[in-house]
Image (cartoon, rainbow, N blue to C red):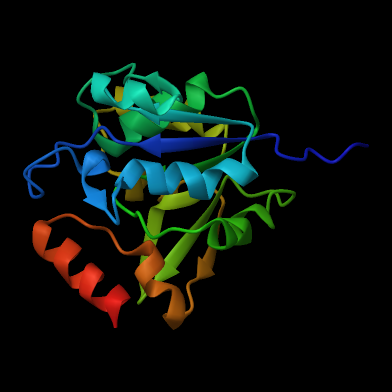
Length: 195
């Protein structure tokens, strides 16, 4: 059997309101590049296609497929549902648009478990699970839809009802998975990188 090399879709979730950042998070610039460009570059060596889930047409200039929520205003589960529904592959690397320090090497750790019988392979840092940096099987879309039909928007609820493998993030890699939700976060991260 041929190994499904690169038979993985990268899904970037960029549908949040970005209210705390004050502008579209995926388009905030770090080191002369928008957050989403950093994430595209980290995903690119590992995937056959990249999809961004967003209704913002400003993402169209990045030469990746943009799709919108099938069930609008339904939070992260809605974005995940749309990305998995449009994906053509069994395995999908899902990354939120606000982790610009993520690296290819880090994401490879998730892929190592693709052959396992897990629905989700997610990260955990400082005792907190991170379902928005994870590998999802395409079949998770069905459970997303089921929850959305029951007005359930919380990603943690999805994770709690599926078969999950959680990988602990080493302390040196904590920065890689840090969300940048505010300008203060961005300043703190920039200072940490510079030192």
